[in-house]
Image (tube, rainbow, N blue to C red; front, side):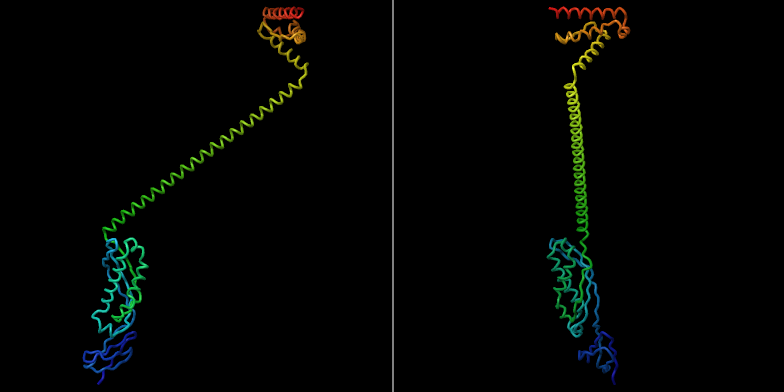
Length: 301
């Protein structure tokens, strides 16, 4: 009499005869002898496993909690079932041990930023070591590396200090740049103002020089008749003023030349003297007449 045992897909059957392993059967229908034999199923499919967080000490004596997940599958059902009491736990201990070795060679900061490299190093370290357990690790990943509470507080303080320092540096650099730009703008304004003033002064000087040149040229080209007429106007203005003394140049030729001018100034027919008081007008005329007599006497001598 035979019994029937169906082994599922991705499984193998381990046939035990009177409690001792005798053979391995594949998935499908298998026959065995009841009471004398027993068929145990072993899954060959990939299995996930999560290793709960455990403490690791880094190179700088910082405590860190690591959480690891991995995938594995059974490669040898006999080793997996009979040569190890708990092949999965043995594999987990192997992973933890190698992870401690790797993390122990890293500082805290290096460990926190090097999870990808740690994954690669851990997979290489495990390699074929799990063959002893009839298991193959397909993938391993560090899900989390979390510092202890005390270290986390210290890191938070350090991070805050670094941020404040960075903010202070940026603020100081901004103020320095602002002062630099403001100073440059003021200097540019002063330079532009100085240039404008220099240009204005130069333009004014050129204009003054041009005016002087024009006047000088006009004076060089002026005739004696024009000068005589100007003298007449000057003496006429003096005669119309309150001044009682007229000074003429001590030049004989010019004195005689201007005598006729003075004669015109004291001509009573000129309407100009009508503007003054009668007594003052006669006094002015008398003074001018006296001056003319003195000039004539000097010329005769």
